[in-house]
Image (cartoon, one colour):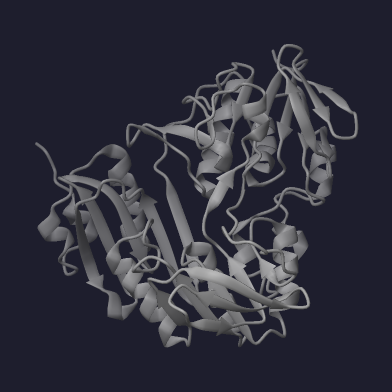
Length: 411
């Protein structure tokens, strides 16, 4: 069936690693080659901003699978290897070391890179971003023993690193140009909740300010100058202002690219032999009837299963609702869905109790649920969003009513 086919996966991150697992699980018996420009086997990314920094997880526990798995499953793993170009007509990859790899199926799982600060002279040994294990290693080495961390960007990665740093006793300042934290990805209720939680633990939150200048001495960053003239001293800094998809290979090969590699519902690109998954893919979201580029683990898992089913000639899995999570301090946030075009937010529970949820609607349609220490609301919200279930707004706002009784039942 497919035992003579050659599948080459470019990218050894969460997406590429999970695709290897999914392919064998789906019954794909062909040859698999995984090409990664990193020096480590595929590993989990979420712990890098949390448990990896405070040394509560080892490298072995980060790995998706041990080295023996790849040998047992007949997977060729090529680490520290860079693909220079795709020769679509010949179905061949050319690597930087001169190696040529032929493929029947090519999967681009090249991820995304940190968006840099648009400032001159931003190359300092203590100015960090956080996208991979090498980044996390450098940050961890300097974080232990540091006195003051400046976090530029109030998104999830920045806040998770801020929480880890505070738990290590490091002073933290978070610099956010918007009026609130998580402004592009969360409700106002959730943004304000996290601002209070971080401030209560000693984090200095600076809203509505941008970075005007980075000052240094002998190649090391010494302070961040804000556009309001305030200067914040620090002995290291993290930039977390978004990510840029690594779609250059696809663009050079003439594939359709638009803020990521454009794919269809099978994760197939404009070339039927080439697929793209994970952070680099601009994919359709059937639940929301639009194309979107997602940067989350659930997306990589779903797309890995989709491509595995296609290559193994199996039925496609059911469409999934995007979901996310974030761990900061002792707070467990779970998000189901996307807050797209929402016009009404209904809070269930009391944020002061550290157990609440925000149900986000567009008209009468439930679009997303943000659940803080509230797993039942997360699970039911995810189910309702996927099924298009109507939710009674009056009931969902009343925490004395069981969340299970808030769905509108049609006779």
